[in-house]
Length: 88
Image (tube, rainbow, N blue to C red; front, side):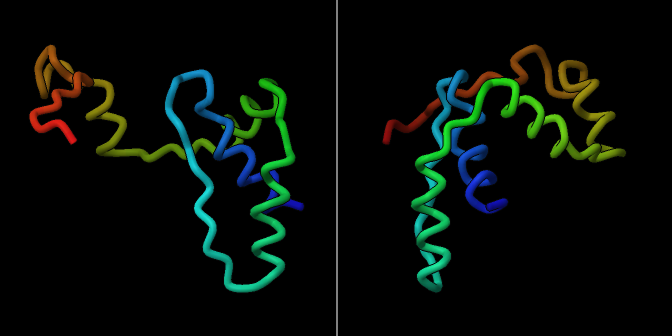
């Protein structure tokens, strides 16, 4: 089913980056619960993950493209660096 593969892709697409995505279970009916649980049994290949990522990419257009292309000149050299000021 599409939902099961979508949930599997969302959970697995960042596995190689160290980021983690957790499927949040809050089904409104038994079918949604089954779809959520069945997605845990799906393992996508790297090619499938890359294809789904490519197909789902949305061109945000102006001004997003301009900002992303010029981030360093707009925000400085530390663009993309996260500074944790308060430990959790």
